[in-house]
Image (cartoon, rainbow, N blue to C red; front, side, top):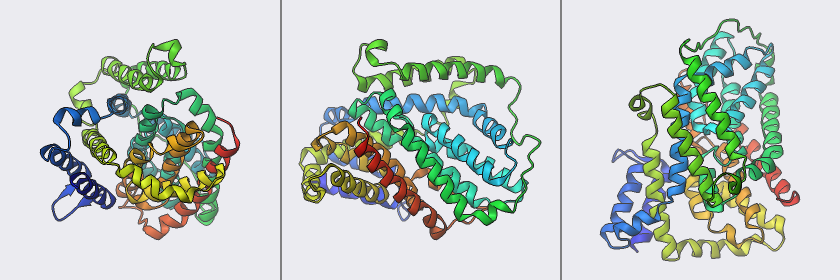
Amino acid sequence: MVSLSVFLLVYIVISFRQVRILNQNSSSVVLLGTVILVIFGVFTLEEAFSSIDVNTIVLLLGTMIFSAYVERTKFFEATSLWFISKAKKPRVMLGILMFVSGFFSSFFVNDTVCILLTPLVVAITRKINANPIPFLLGLVMSANIGSAMTLIGNPQNMIIATSSGLPFYKYFIYVLPMVFLSLLIAYLFILFMFRRDLNNVEVVIKESIYRIPQPYWFIIYRLGLLFLLFVFMLFLPSEKLLNVPESQKLPIIAITVGALAIVVGRFRPDDTLRVIDWTLILFFSGLFIVVEAVREVGIVESMYSFIKPYFGNSEISKYSVFSLITILGSNIVSNVPYVMIAKSWVREFVNPDKAYVLLAVVSTFAGNLTIIGSVANIIVLEKSKSVAKIDFWTYSKVGIPITIITSILAVIYITIIPF
């Protein structure tokens, strides 16, 4: 009863994102839930600590450290602006923005990309006197879709990476055509929905809105070489790089690159490390403990037993129902908490690796469904609310169709193409 009560408390708060009356958020409530589990004897302190997936925490931390150092150089903004400035027409500018955003999100986490590029989009649309809404929607939709391209593009994929042991390079090569096509679908849909806004604007961007300070170029060069080394190591099979299981390869590489970034970044470590989202680390750690508590008393298995009869017998029906549940679950309780529960269900599938890929892709695409489907959505809307009023319907008439179409594409692709 204690495990079930804590589970319901935590997941209800996660669904609503925060408790305004008590001035609490998801991270603080998850922390409270873990304390209750220990106090009431569900776990000893040692058992609670052992429930935390250290591989995921280390992978997340290493990626965040490296991203924080790149962020300080304003490299994302300057590079994106350079590409966008080459566009002569708004529809071309939208396409460049979406594909640049999608690429950056695949390696530097979609939330980070949205934090950095939203002010740039606002500045550019103001300069050319354009409606910012299609560009902001394009930014967030492409960031969500692009982050599915790798196992380090978003937090839920990191969980799947360390749980499944899927090789990074194999996953990337497999999903690349599907993600690219999904980005193209999203671009064409937004282009169609806002065709009037995108045809009545002249694009002239001559001077730089963002300038990288001269001393930073040397730092960018060193971080760039480090990033290339990072990517090279990711694409090597683990047996040729490290004598460790595949599930430990990504965390070891990520934290190594993060540590090296501190050395070569030449910024004060305390100033840079301060901007890391430590509450997210706390949220992940506590959530691992809560989910392990309900798994031990059989609640996760009971949930799967309830939905299993609806899966059907064919492979495509199983993937379709699983995708539908994933879309709904990712939007009700957010994709990270949902994936922590659903990752244990994929072992029941005939091909668990394919099911892991489907879970990673669809839980990510599901972030585009509604305004609250992804943290990236909330970031973009909050940072642009002074210039763009994107209400629930304005977002949904774009997000819902794109989510449905791209998710159907994912189911068909994963069913047909061998992994």
